[in-house]
Image 1 (cartoon, one colour):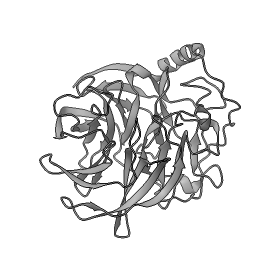
Image 2 (tube, rainbow, N blue to C red):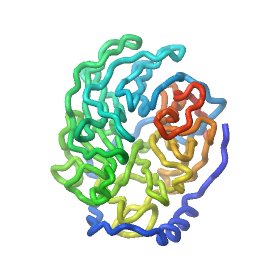
Image 3 (cartoon, rainbow, N blue to C red):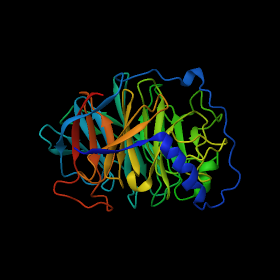
Length: 380
C-alpha cells in the first residue's frame, strides 16, 4: 500500500484560477443561469451509512481475478455481481473467487467506452430488480431486469426499458447509476462529444438525472417536467452520498482539471464554458480537483464522511476526507500497484471493494487482470 501525494483543496483552487484562465476554450454559446439550489423537502435524503471518517487499513486481497473489462460492482445477499462492459455480461463472484455468468443483457452494443456500464439493485415488495445502464444500437439507455434465484443460482429475467434517448458516442457516455437515500434512481450522462449538450436543459446529455424506479419524473426535480437534476457536466462517472446525505459526483475533465463536485438540485457545473474552479458566479465550482494525469475519476464511494475515488489514468485510489465540511484533503493509495481502477464500492462487511480496468483496451494487463480487490477500513 502506498500513501503519499496529499493535496489541499485551497491550493488547488488557487492553481485552477491561474492555469485554467490560460487554457483556450471553445465558445459554447449562452450558458443557462444557475437556478435556485434550495433542496425541496421531498428531495431531502435521509442520512445513511457509518458515521465519521475512515481510511484503508492492512493489506489488500484479491476476491476475484480474470474479469474482462469490468465496469460496475453490486453486492447482493452476500454475493457480488459485476458488469463486463464489452461482453455485455453480468458475472457473479462465488466463494473462492470463481466467476459464474448470471446472464447477458439484451441489446448491448459495445464500442469504444460504450457497452454494459453501471449496475444498481432495488429490492422492494418482495421483488428484486437489477438495473443496468448500457449502450444500445442508437443510444444509451437504462433497463431493469428481475433478478431471480439465490447466490450461486442467480438468473436475469427479461429487461424492461426505463430510459432511452441518451446520446451515445465512442466516449463520454457517463453510465453510473445508483439509488439515492430518497429512493430515487440517479444516473450520470456524458456529453457524448457534443459539448453544447451540457448547457442545453432540453438534452439528457451532460447531466445528472433523477427518476423514479419506473423512469418517471419525480416530485422535487428542479426543472419541472424533466429528469434533469444538475447540468453542465462533461463526463461524470461516479455518484455517492456521505453519511449526512450530501451527494457528490466525480467527473472527467478535458485537458486541465478532473473534478469532485457537491451536487445540488438545479446546479450548473459549467461545462463546456469552464473546467475546474473558475469563481464564475453562474456556475458551481468543484469542492476538489486534480490534474488529469493524477485522476481520470470513474467510480465514487462513500463510507461515512469519507469519499473514495477510483482513478483510471492516475492508477490510484484517492481518499478524500473533509468534503462534507468544505475542507477536503485527498490522499492516494495503491498508486501503480494495480494499474487503472474503474469502480469502488463500500462492502456489506464494512470493508471497501474496487475493480481494476486494465483489459479495456487502454490499460496494460497484468497477470490475473482484471481483478476485484478488498481492503479493510478503520476509523481515521
